[in-house]
Each structure stands twice: as C-alpha cells, then as structure tokens.
Image (cartoon, rainbow, N blue to C red; front, top):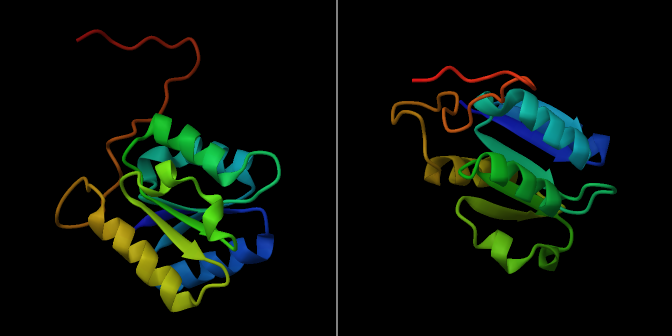
Length: 148
C-alpha cells in the first residue's frame, strides 16, 4: 500500500484518520498542525505517496503547507479535509492530483478518496506504490553535490 502524511490541528482527527488508513493497509506519518506537517514531509519526503491535510489550522494553514510541499515535490497527491468546502481556492482544487473531502466524513469515504488520488497520481512503478523518487532527500546545509 502507500505511505500517507496525515496533518490536522485536532489530535483526535489525526488519530482516527490514521487508524482508518492503517486498517486499510496504509502506513501513516502523523503530524499535529501545518508547521509539523511540513517538517514531517521534509523528513520523510521520499517515502510519502500522498498527503491528507486539514485546511483550517492555526499558524500554518493547509493551503500554505500545500504550496510549500508542492514547491518541493510538485506531483505529491493531496486530499484536503475541511468543514467549509468553499475555503480552498479554486487554483488549489484544480491543481493536479488534489481532492476535497468534507468534514464530517465516513471512514469509507476517506479510504475511497485517498485511493482515488493515489490511483490517478504518477507512480515510481506500475506494479506497486514504491517510495517516490520524484522528491530526493534534501542535502544537509553546506554539503556539496558530486559533479557528474
């Protein structure tokens, strides 16, 4: 299955969503809030197949985190979850591999929406969801890349 980053400012939503996705066979990296979501993505980027992100969060909101993550990895699929479906700008909703899931949602809707974005997204191989090779890990500060 896939490795998913689950980000929400509500620990209960993170816990329940993670449990549902794990039961469906996925691996989950969980983060509370947008800044920790970005940090978790930076740490695990080569392994993340998709991101499940709340829109409204204090500090770094979901749309800001989306832009940051998509700048680093333009192809990573996103599922936005929100109680206010008009809160996501059209430019974000029409971006490739983005879906919207309205809160409250059922477990089956969460699993099927994640499945849809994963199925439509680019994959490292056709046979299975392998770690994403589109987002190599960042080099440590000051490190130089070997010349080819």
